[in-house]
Amino acid sequence: MSLVPGKLPLRLKLIHGFGAVAFGVKDTGFSFFLLLFYNQVLGMEAWLVSLALLIALLVDAVVDPILGNLSDRTYTKWGRRLPWLYAAPIPLAFAWVLLWSPPGGEAPSFLGLVGIAVVVRILLSACEVPSISLLPEITSDYVERTTLFRYRYLSGWLGGLFMMVLAYSVFLSGENGLLQREGYFSFGLFGGILMVISVMGSAIGQHKLVANLPATKPPPFSIKACFAEIYEAFSEKAFLIFAAGGLAAYISQGMSFSMSNYLNVFVWRLDATPLGEGGATMLDIYPLALFLSVIVMFFIVGPLHHRLGKPKSAAMSAIGSLVILLSPYGALLAGIWPDTGTFASAMLLYALLIPGNALAITVMISASSMIAEIVEAYQERTGKRAEGAFYSGNWLVQKCATGVGIFLSGQFLSLAQLSPSADPTAVPQSVIADLVVYFGIATVLLALIAAYWLGRFPINREDHEARVAAMNAAAMPAPVEPSPPIRR
Image (cartoon, rainbow, N blue to C red):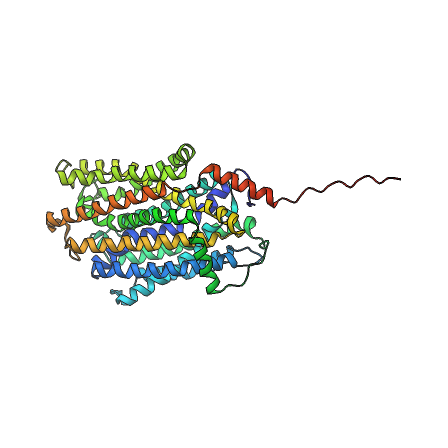
């Protein structure tokens, strides 16, 4: 039984979604700026930084199922999830600041970078896994779950874009732009504060609804039982199909995000394209283009799911995003694109980025929303609910894949022979062309794999609603037969 039957109030959607702002802050930092900061600012080799981030992601991915299982087994008067959302954010903020201001102001050792990245990721998971695991508890409605995911993604992207805007216009707006070391401390400090406000604010806003002693006391935690449950969750056919498509989609996302600043600066020269007077450049409005793509997503994902269902929406969006987002690179290699570094080139790039990225986010929302339906399928088969296990399994897939995507980015940069602290105006065109080719080939392969597997997801709306109705009927107490009249 869900905590809120029927349509969810707008206030709850906003409050629940607000918790994802912390994830957006982390995503912007790790995916857009961290590789650039440690490679181009602190002088570490790109392949070494990407390897450190991959290791941190893999460690975090192994820890995630443990956190999810612990969350499922937490038994307090505040419920299963809230204690985590109150305990983890403040340590997370301190670790986040340290990541952007390593001791001594110099690049840490390889193991030092791995260590702090692991701590940040684990603490972020201790916030995000319990938060998102609340979703299938709040509602079992097929449409309302999509709505909650829309608000989570909207909030996550807005939090990340807000940090990106501040990075470009405030923290890293000096003469050296993205290459100035001092601005990254302020970037980290503000991001840490925003994470605390997001997670704790969302928890406080949902406290009255979800702070209840669980109906049944779960068995005590054990590592063996934890991974046995994860193994059982991964044996669910629907989850395996989701994981195959999600793996490819997440690798592509991690690669695209970590490459974006390199592509914007070295390929498209957005940082050197004037935007009116006053020294602003076209790079300054990159977050605005992403924001507009999120708004487009917010209004198209509901109708797409209503008309096509989640699997077809994911598959078609993956193909559509691939065609739109790669077309500028194909035109550039073919010599039919306007000269890079010009206003016409930047505006045409943004015009394609907005719908392309909207479809890319739709893929992620569709995939994430599928997991909520797996929860009831698993409950029907086993009699147990394991939201934390499935969402931590999703994070395992996502983080392993994102780490691979970042790792691939580092390898592409090394293969293309883009040197650390390179001057964008002095990079040979052959290096740019190689970088585009490596990126393009990987993007095509990953998008096709994601579209194929996500399109084969076996649970549609009718299946889900029939399953929920059957379980609700089974949970209702049997009607009491009236006693026969007493004869006198």
